[in-house]
Length: 409
Image (cartoon, rainbow, N blue to C red):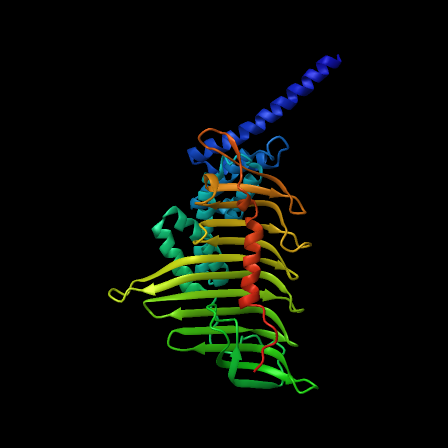
């Protein structure tokens, strides 16, 4: 009797597993047949069932289903959040796909979705978010050689960039301001991005007098500098001598035919600590003097998130290094990589490796699989240490160009 019960139990379990595996297949079959509502029903069930929810193929299939829904005017209303669903599925598949079986196809789906997000954000006037998506997608399409999307993304970044204007007022009447205002010559160092040293420009800012006769900066701050070949803008807000809210730095050097442009956007909390999104971009822009065609050559793109003064997430792309990387750092131990890191580029074996760190920054695994033989190979030491290297570069960018003590007139 026990044998019969066990047989029935295992038979039932096998049938359940087979049914859920079939759900993944049915989902893909209905995608091919154009029945995206049925495909969604099958894949949604597979994504939550115990027998299939930890299978990379399930989430790969989910990314395909929701991506196709997003491309269909007929079915788009059944998943208005399809972009978020695609990116969530891509992230989960990457976590489970230890052999990189779906990596290339997922990258195409992920960055295509990111491109469309960027276009939608740009149309709705959400410029900062559009630029953040565009910078990430641009690096991918440059590497892929897609000139059409490259030009469009560069146009969005150039035309929709969150560049500060040369006006003191932020338009926020809730900002606390000192009772005095300064407008005149001002010396500042570090913001030129090109080792120009201390330079004299013009500053406008609010302040109040301290008891010892010094100034306490409180309210909006704007610094501008311009000569024949260089220009700088620094804009932000002080609260009792502390940088708070969003600060911008934009620097240009060169002429109309070719110039370097570097931009930083960074956020501080009310205690003056780095907190929130951080973005840095470096590109060379120019204009053909014969036909007026404008062009952009990207050199470096860095972005991430800070939590109460500690860098938590970092994305890094460098044309010079031919490497792109993204991952997380510990918020308890500054600069310690944790979790899974993806490193891609021309100098990386097989163009892509995944490195997994424990909570103390120790390497759990660092391998790549040869797609031609299936053999497993180790990863060079410099790649394993790349997260630490780019962490230092990101922090140096902030220390050198962004994070400032109270300025002196």
